Amino acid sequence: MTQQRMGRAEFVALVATTFATIAFSIDAMLPALPEIGAELSPDDLNRAQLVLTSFVMGMGLGTFFTGPLSDAFGRKPVIYVGAAVYIGAALLAWSSSTLEVVLAARVVQGLGAAAARVVSLAIMRDLYSGRDMARMMSIAMMIFAIFPAFAPLMGAGIIALLDWRSIFLGFVLFSLISVLWLGIRLREPLPPAARRAFRLPLLVGALRELATHPMVRLTILVQGLCLGMIFTMITMVQQVYDVIFTRGDSFPFWFALIALISGSASLLNAAIVVRLGMRRIITWALAIEAIWAGTVLLLSLSSLSPSAMFPIFLVFQASVFLMAGMTMGNLNAMAMEPMGHIAGMAASVIGAFSTVMAASLAAPIGLLFDGTLLPLTGAVLVMAATGFALMLMIARIERRAS
Image (cartoon, rainbow, N blue to C red; front, side, top):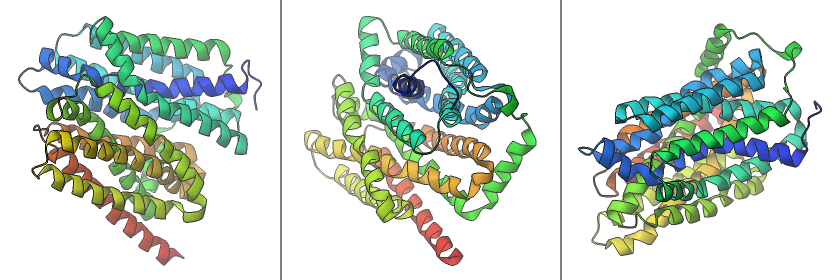
């Protein structure tokens, strides 16, 4: 391990803070959606949701390149450039007067945030290995999993004190704190002698190899569907609370409660994955989600009152986040397992493709919101059932290979 200025506890806190840039950039916008829609898209309030999916789309596209670029030029320079892009785009969104400019700025902001997402993981791999890395990564991810519970509350607080545009200034401040912390306290972890030139053909080759490996290809598709369910829920959830259940004012508190409860999924997965295996857990989680989504869909079509449906929806919302905790880490591990010889490139391609796929699914589905639970529950049902079918195909491939 390269000697650093900071101890392990500070390093974990730094990595968790850098990760949290992503959650803050998405979830803090949720309380602002009604005001964004009323001000910038009064004829179609659903379009306000695109400030979420446009960011995710930009982050997915940036994930293709930030890992290889940090291998070529060093970790800290890429973090700095990513932060500059992120901050510049946030300021553009803050000052814009049209939704189209805000959406374009959010795509660019996502491109910048991709550096925080990818390079911070690379830094942890540079400095630690084996059980040390696993333990520190678990702690960092636990902190990261808790942060989304508070991001909508932070966004709501900023709106109450200032206005919805000031959330973008909050993004600027948050990014400045994390990048200055990293710049001052962390030495460059990748020395020039260990760097590798950026070669686009290598990235294309990794993409081709992933696409031609049947199990890896299917696993990436399932990962995209699971992310699609998460982003579809996040995209529509504020409107569901506000329009269907008339609980828009208390939405950040309910969201925080559900996020905190759902954080237990990763701990449960860690406790049972060795005994049950990754594929079995993913398959069961998707089957349960499909059954529950179908049940909630049917109940939403019944004569139940909104007050009776509200606790059912809370369980449904929690189930989507719990499903993510039981599947995402396992799916990433399954996709990476045969790709050890191109691990860095594979991680970039897998993360990019699954994220872009998820945003491409969530954006048009979110625009279908019609004041009922049908678009949300129907979309989750279809994606969960499709993911379940793909996992059965993976099981058959594994049986033939054994």
